[in-house]
Length: 256
Image 1 (spheres, rainbow, N blue to C red):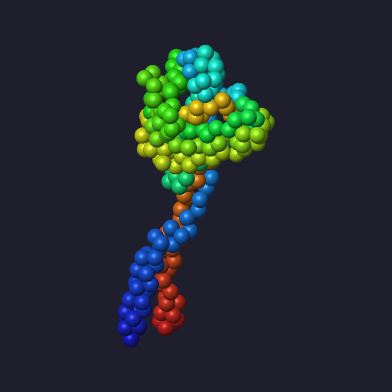
Image 2: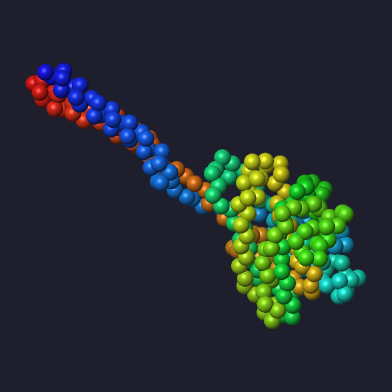
């Protein structure tokens, strides 16, 4: 009679265990957490149109800025046309399930309180921050959406980054800029050799923008969000196994 009772209990426990195992992946997904990590600039420099860089490649302190001049305004001053280049060391993100990566930059100064101009960001596709190499100024096209120029450091995926502020504002300003770099960061993590950072430039105008020092409290940075699944499956499996013995006290009691 006791054997008959055990056979009745065992199918129930096995069904319960199967149900627990079936739902555990879904529960794991629901219980996953998201953590945030900040990645600072690993190298930056600027490149002027005359081919000379006013900063040093690999420099990690000092102002980061961009500026531009209209074609009919002091064309003999190419050193006043400047683009900015930045890279980020993503080694701390290796193996993580990155959900988002947002570039945060804080603008502190615009060149004047007369003009306003748009800024553009692009993914750099060739090395510039290795020993002895500096980036080269690339001539933007008329609409500001693509990089041209035969000798400029190559870029791709040029996109609107932000405006340097109202024409009447400044020269001191406080403007936060954000740009979603999730797709680029994901690509760089999949192929680290393709990570050459980004370039900032302005459209054709007598304008400029300065950002906080790369080592300051509001330095340019990537804010990365990544998923961290809870070990829900590990917790649920023992629960299911415990179901196999859920009636064992009753069996022992019956045997007594």
